[in-house]
Image 1 (cartoon, rainbow, N blue to C red):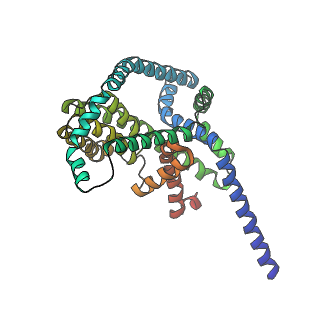
Image 2 (spheres, one colour):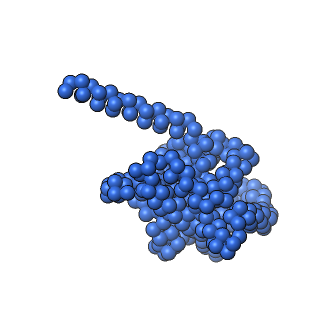
Image 3 (cartoon, rainbow, N blue to C red):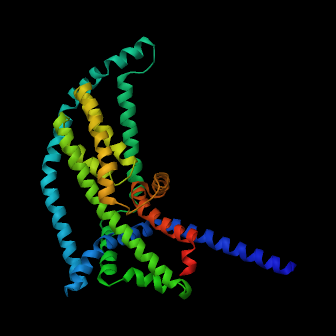
Length: 342
């Protein structure tokens, strides 16, 4: 009986060591895994279109190439239309920054008077200096975390190549998962993979539509109340929308600050625009566009964002949502005993 206890104990220790070594290896190759995850997400998004063309006797490889060409064309047109006005607005802001800065100081006059009356040792120059330093550090951290993943043209080529080969062959991801899964669990693994692909594909397409709608809403709202550089602010808000909960808050800061640089009234109206945009998003757009594509608890989403950001910066925070969705499906199956049934 004693020797059996020692054998079980040794087996547990050995398995624990293997798991820890596996986690350590995953951490070492996280940059490669991130590129693979991005490719899988893109495959999940374009696969319905590829399947549609395949049913009409169009080869999958040609369908993927056509989607690539369409994507590059849309990006090129978008850049050609947006870059000139964005560059003009940036140039205008750099020229008029001293005036906006002075207006902002004037608008916070009551706050400055309160600080002086209570002998608080801080000046508006210190506030601007601290704010600039924090923004610079935030930007530096973002790029220092993500530069290892997208370190140039090669990484982009890798993503598009992986996406092409996984899309050109029908059910390539599912077949790969089946090939590396023991036969007893193969049926369940294939089914889980299909469900994950379906949810991730819906999430990505819904996310793009959500980003576009928020950008349009913010542009119209900020333009109507007279906040300058509404186009840049709206594009920034749309991009940040891909990071749930945190992104919208971050995107609202520059718009509100610019509003207060114009006047306190415009600043308050800018806050109203961002609050209304979030209410419309949470109560109308998300239920209609995203529906239950993800279905994660808000607390789980925030924790996933924090872990993803810690591991791979902003890109990690973005990819944390589809990864957490896949993990939640698997854990849900374990809790319900579904994997055993399969």
